[in-house]
Length: 79
Figure 1 (cartoon, helix red, strand yellow):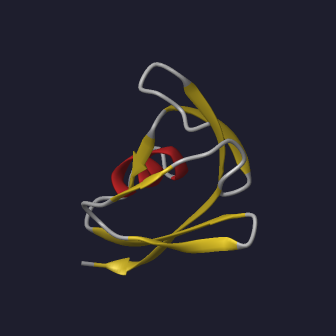
Figure 2 (cartoon, rainbow, N blue to C red):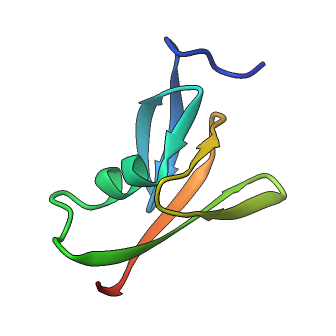
């Protein structure tokens, strides 16, 4: 069962549990959850995993989320 717009989903961002509204999450949301405040002019890499699936998330894109999904956001340099 996938989450609806009014359900919160438990995800893990950089090892910390977070609750976010479903059914998907954007690259920008993950960066904002990982870095507070977000460093100006920084570039980021975001990867995700859930079970035996995984991938990367790029700026301007989103991924459907499920409870327990793990996201890792790293600062990769200056723009």
